[in-house]
Length: 167
Image 1 (cartoon, helix red, strand yellow):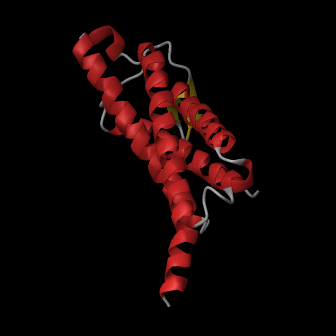
Image 2 (tube, rainbow, N blue to C red):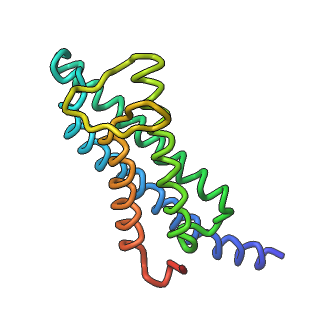
């Protein structure tokens, strides 16, 4: 009995560690990618012209923190919805294919909520927009949620041992 329990723990241990390492890498890369994107797109929002440096720094850190929470939420939701319990060993492409549109959809909702409903922020005239359900939604944040996760997923998959990923 003890031997079978030890065997089960040994079998799941490396996989659990592998999942946690992949999750940590995903979170860290998401943080870096979204931080860089938030800094880069700051001039596309009106606060670029009106806020102090401290307010701009807070906005970047606040938004990046939110981005990381969204990234982790859509990843975990995708794992649960697809029942991909062996992630990152299997179904990586399906998880990415679900997580990325979920992130884009949430971003479109969040932009609408904060620009139109709450009026928490506004776009500068330089912000490219995309019409969604009659509202002009910022193109840069939508592109952010396409580009950053694609790069992050690609790096996570590429850095994992080849034998660990089964597509």
